[in-house]
Length: 69
Image (cartoon, rainbow, N blue to C red; front, side, top):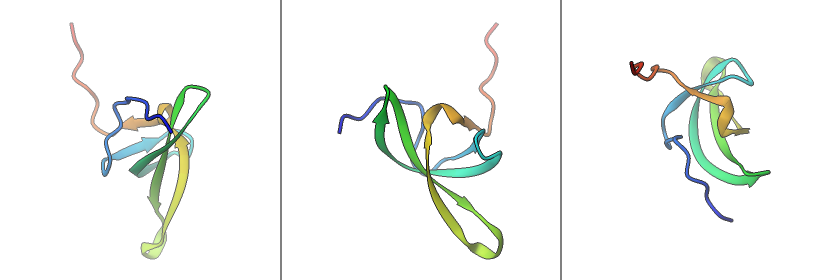
């Protein structure tokens, strides 16, 4: 499997637009139609964690990048 270079960092928290929840990036697991797919983990009530596979483009950083200009 060829890894695609993306700005997603392992162990970092992101807003998953697909779920509308904060998730933690675990690792890149595949490339589908040229898009890197990431395994992420979301925390549910009472400490339960669930892992999902999502596209890297559905992950947004929690801290916005400073605007250039």
